[in-house]
Structures are given as C-alpha cells and as structure tokens.
Image (cartoon, rainbow, N blue to C red; front, top):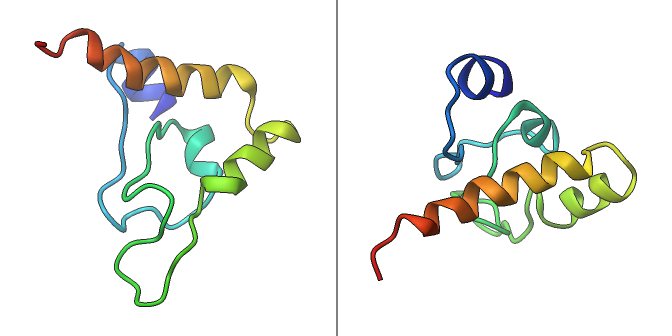
Length: 87
C-alpha cells in the first residue's frame, strides 16, 4: 500500500481495513494501513475483546518497530478527511 498506492499512484487518502479483515498486527501499519476496523476490538469472533493494534501499536511505536513518522502519516491522512466535511 505504501509503495504502489501511496507513492506511485500518489493516493492522498487513508487506507482502512474492512471489518474483521485484518489478520496481522503492526506489520499492517508498516505496510500502509492507516486505520483498522472495528477499532480497538477484534470483529466477528465471539468473546474477542482485544485488538491487533491498540496497545500493540503503542508498544511498537515506543520500541521503534513502527516509526513515529509512520504514525504521524497515519494520523495526518485520517484527519485530513475532516477538512473536506461540510459543517
């Protein structure tokens, strides 16, 4: 996603997972996914109340597995969408 979509095709938006389609942790952040759904819980599996990102993403930024600049890019892409929302 970072190479083809965001670099070669110059996509300025954010990449979000489909509900329950994310099956790996912080590797998806490094690959270019900017937001995971349904957020801080796993979808579609009874009794799941954890997340593949959540605290794992925080820990990965703290230990350098995911760079701070990648996190900044994720946030900027997500928040940029609000600029175009009519109020």
